[in-house]
Image 1 (cartoon, rainbow, N blue to C red):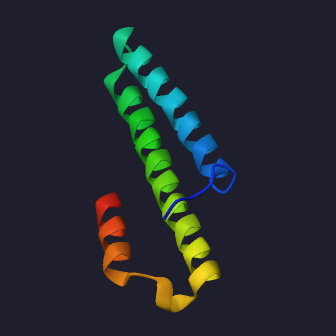
Image 2: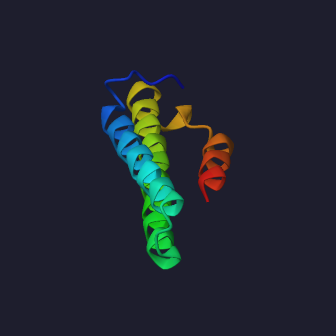
Length: 86
């Protein structure tokens, strides 16, 4: 399913924020920051990316249901997408 940029604007914003946060973690490591602090920040980046993925799935599913109804949902494909995020 193709989603328009305006439909996923919030997802894009979330992922851009996570990208900036990841750059900060890399900078921390390059500057010799405490390993525990860097790991905590890396965990936050990981969670933000995961939430972005789930938000993308949710947006796609909502569009699919709105346009084609419940019959338009491919359960196997949806399961595959969710498992890819796990």
